[in-house]
Length: 234
View 1 (tube, rainbow, N blue to C red):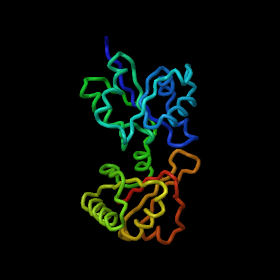
View 2: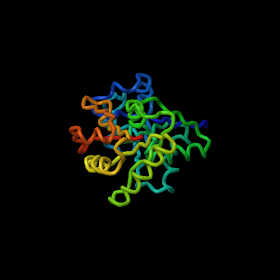
View 3: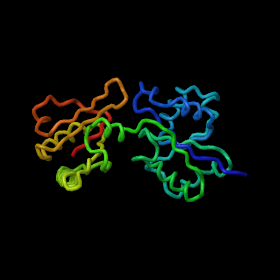
View 4: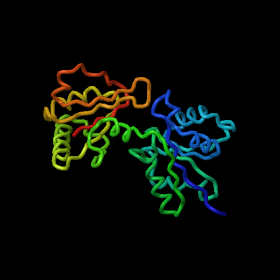
């Protein structure tokens, strides 16, 4: 029996943003019956919104998140090994980018399975595109340390990388700590450093602004509390 394929399915970044997904992606999602997702409740809401042709209870939905043990990942590929196509979805928008789904994709390659990434919104790339900062060289560094001394040291190191390599630095924060992160950025980075704040991308409340640190200090700061945000500086 031939193996199935692993499809990497992007999901909207906001509730109003289903128009950001290409029609062919939505149509192909409707053909799938097996899914591995980061959070079942969110995934089922998305599948309901695309009007799956079968009842949601007839779909096989398994979770893969930061708590999934590495030894349990192979079992998630069982449908593909049995000849069925499988869809991988993430809470992060694009599967396997800043996402635990990368573990499943890596294992699929090790098993010689075909991996098919679908087109959709990536908050990282959208933020970089909209920032006006250097897009030829950039680094996404995930989350920064939580404790103030370690965070300040990391920001200083990243700023040196930005200057030495002319490399845009991108990172994220837990949404309820976004305002504190912005305050730390203004207190730590050099006045001439360019900082972009990209928040709630692809939604009606989308915000993308780039200013020097000196200009940010003179401006009215946005309220980023509990709003998905990416920070970029150069």
